[in-house]
Each structure stands twice: as C-alpha cells, then as structure tokens.
Image (cartoon, rainbow over all chains, first blue to last red; front, side):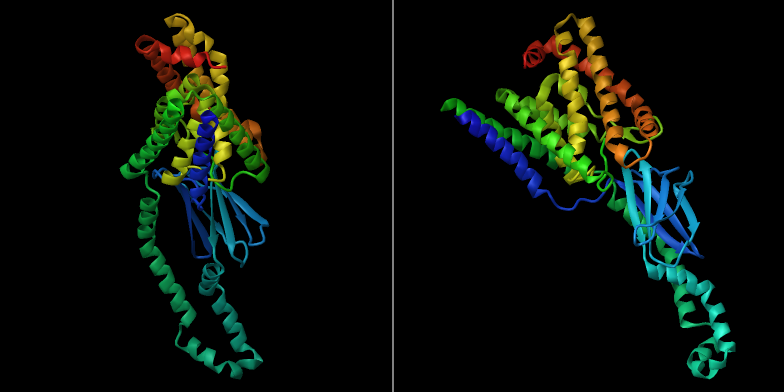
Length: 207
Length: 203
C-alpha cells in the first residue's frame, strides 16, 4: 500500500518541480544581435561560451512572416544585407542541430537608415514644386543645411558605434556559463529529491 | 544535446512529452527504491556531464553519459535524465521547458535500448564486458544524435544533411564516452560487482 503512495509522491514531486519552473526560459545559449548601418542590416551570431556561429543560415522575414531573403554568416559569425523593404524585419539565425535565435529589427531603426540617405532627396523635389510656400517651416530647416532628422540619425549612429562593444560585453556576461552557485544549487536539488524519496521508502519499510 | 525552444513544431513537442511521461512512469515503477541514492548520483553525474564541453570537431558538443546511465539504471534512466534536464533548463537555460519532453526522450530512450542490448554481456568475463561497455557508451551517443536529427526532420529540410552533421559532431564524444563507460564498468565489476548484476536482473 505504501509502495504505491511512495511512487505517487515521487511522481507528484517531479510534476511539481516541472510546474514550479514553468516560467519562460530564454532560448539556448545562442544569441543574435542586429543593427542597422548605412542602409544595411548587420547580424552577429555567437554561442554563450563566446564561440562564433560561422556559416549559420540567416533567414529574413517581414512582420507577416513572409520570407524575404536568406543568407549565411561568414567565418566571424557576422553577416550583412541591404534592407529589402521599409518594414520591421524579423531575422532568424539557425546554427544547426537545433540552435536558433530570432531578433526583431524595429521599423524606426530601418526608417532611420533611410532618413540619412533618401529622405533629403525627396525633400528637394518637394521644395522645387509649386507648394513651396506652404513648406516654409521645413525649408527653413533645409537652409541650416541639416535637419533634425539627420542630426538624430547621426547621433544614433555614433551612439550605436560607441555602445556596441558595451552591449556585446553585457550580452556575453548575461549569457555566460553557469556559475558555481548554479551547479551547487542544482546538485542540492538532486540530493534533496533523493532524500525525500529515501525518507518515504524507509517509512514504507517500517510500516 | 539540447534542442532550443521554438525550433520544433507542436506535434513533435507533444509526442516527445507523451513518450517522456510514459518512460518516466515506467522508470519510477521499476525503480528499486533502496537504490535511490544511486539514481540520484547518476542523475547528478548526467547533470554535470553537460558542462564538459568537447572542443573537438565542427561544433561545440558536450558529454552525455547516457550509456552508463542506461546500463546501471535501466528504465530508471528516464527519471534521472528528466530531473537533470529540468535543472539544466532552470539553472543554465540549456534547452527549455517546452522541449523538455523531446530532449529527455532523445537522451533516455537510447539509454534504455542500450540497457537491453548490453546488460547480459556485463555478466561475462572482464574483456567481453569491457568491449561491450565501450560499444554501449558509443552507441547510446550515436542513437541520441540520430534521434535529434529525427526530431529536427520536420523543421530542417534534409534529414541526411542534418544527421550527418549531428553524428560527425558527436564522433569525438562517442569515443570519449565509450572509454568512460568501459572503465566505469571494469571498475564497478572489480569493486562492487553487485551494482551491475542486480540491475541487469531488472526485467
């Protein structure tokens, strides 16, 4: 009789551990970072232990999930491609054997890349048109030679460049290997489970 | 051997989960509860083995130890692997909770297969047992790699390509684990022969 209870308890324990830990867990120790620079999207893929994911398949989707293009990372675990369209982009990197990660390149980052390049060209066209008077406020900005949007883009770019090593360092620290505390804690859990099981086993035997 | 979250499709996840639940139920039923400490120790060994990376070969792989787990625990390998993988998912973010079923099955099922294939040979003289244990350690890793390739079949296009990649990545692991398993068995046969005989008698 106790034998059955014992098993039931163990099963419940295993189930309880599973339920208690049913919190969203991040993907494998494999992460991808993406940034936009000069009309191109740059991707860098690395494993948690610092090794780079070279020759990994890179697939780019639009927000609706339509596949736009595929490419692959080089020996340095990086790759770049021209922005295929002005929407947010989802970049999925598959490093094989079930390792994959996905990053979203948001719309405003894509837009900022266009703001630096194409937008001024559009503006001059408008200024030459018949509605030039109505755009007096924007033409004043053009007169100063630089628009607010351009300043924004330049600052963003400079910040991106300066911050990238720091972001990368943070990411690698975040995803670094397990600490001694993790290992000791997990072994403690196993010993605890064994202890609980043994306790019920002896109780059953004594009964 | 940890497939990430979001890689596998729902049918594979559900099938893996169901098989793992069934395997763990059988394992808990067959378990000799007087030997619970041994299960715990092997579970802890499995848990730690994943931290030992083997930097040889095309990809970063780690030890599995499922051969020795199967040999000593039989169906008990299921709960031992499940506990180890749950803890790895929580503490190290290896794999993940939704893929737990598939990952457990991929590791524990080859362990059980190897248990049935090799348990009788463990009773034989030292040389035979040594060779058999080596084959057991290597075969369990090979089977696990093949099962990973099968799990990925629905998401990655070509089965042959994927399985070739996974298997070649695990060739060094197979050699290492074969050696570890062989020496473990020889050691146990010398020092504690009852460990092997009693478990081999398990139905």
